Length: 403
Image (cartoon, rainbow, N blue to C red; front, side):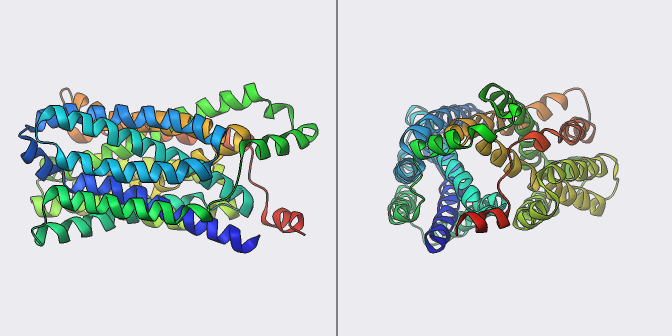
């Protein structure tokens, strides 16, 4: 059992890397795709709404399918569909075909995102200790891998469509090859387990209470991921427009934020095991609030770099805890619950840049970031929700149950 569990964990890492790579492969080719389709930046911005709409819809579908069919079926199928869909934007030659391609690719990416997170919840439960943040860290690794592959294919002069199709084909093969290692968890198994534990469940664990908690977790995910989305699009512009940094220096602002996010997620699981998920959300969001406040008030470039690093480090462990808590709230509905948190969080990720952009029509950019401080402080104050959320069993409990 231990060998199969380790294999399932490795396979889950593979799917997270795959998801990050496939999404990253689209991102790094955006300039070439925009040129090939003959569209402006403004048109591309509108088409990206379709990508987000497709992803949100795919997330909701994936939640129900995963609970009904099991993650072992839905995860590899989603990975193969997402790999196949990656080729579509590279083939688009006008706004209409690109619109359809992004809608389909977004839908398939949403399927993979939620189904692999639902499987990660099962793996974490079987391990009996926190492992969710490590999975999210490897998603970022996939983005780095996509950037390296994209740079290599571009320097080699490889045709855009061929390059994206090649990455997609590799993704299909990887998704198929990794399928057998996934946990054979079925909804029936989970419901049976839940029924056996029903007599021991606390009144707070009823389905109505669990659903209410999940939606509160989803609102927190929206706030945290809105902050992430704002950092993605506005960190470099802050250094350039507010502090007058050269474009090359300003670009490092996002790099510092992303690196801090990745490092934080690699460390978070150990911290959760020692201090608990509530502490990660509370002190992580407080650290993020301090970081973005430093960005707002700091008049120096080095202070801005420090602020963005603290912001990324603080936010890094928050979303994985929300996903994990949602999945453990009701094991029989892990997919649906994760889809609610992921879906609303994704809305926040998309809305973040737009909300900050709207505020800049009335405020200076750094003053608009005060909203992010307020959202982080709100998450800090609401962290107590993770105290009442069902927790994964302790490592000692898992070891005892395995004998």
